[in-house]
Image (cartoon, rainbow, N blue to C red; front, side, top):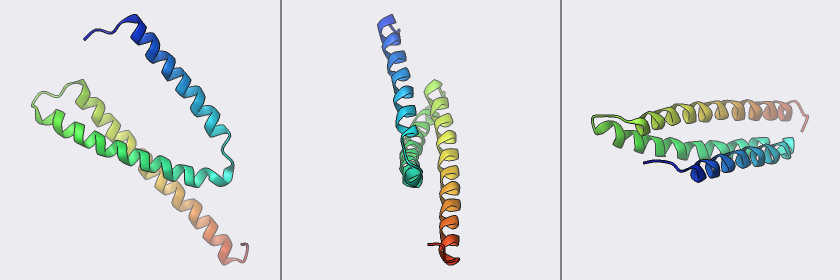
Length: 106
């Protein structure tokens, strides 16, 4: 499998545009929407975990794990860290809101 110059340039262009679009979208999100946005990111990372588990299972069971198996394993580790961290931050924010309501602040 060989990549052509046009395919590499096209892939790099899409990657750079995705970075720019992601930065622009996230910077425009008001602070009140950060918790729901994080919940959506956790859901997407959960889907990534399921896909990485399926790919890891198929790739590692063939006896000779290739690049795809190791990339799936890396995706599994990073998505798990993202989900756990997201839930920890969301839980902390919800505790802060609940604390304000108990004290009569809301």
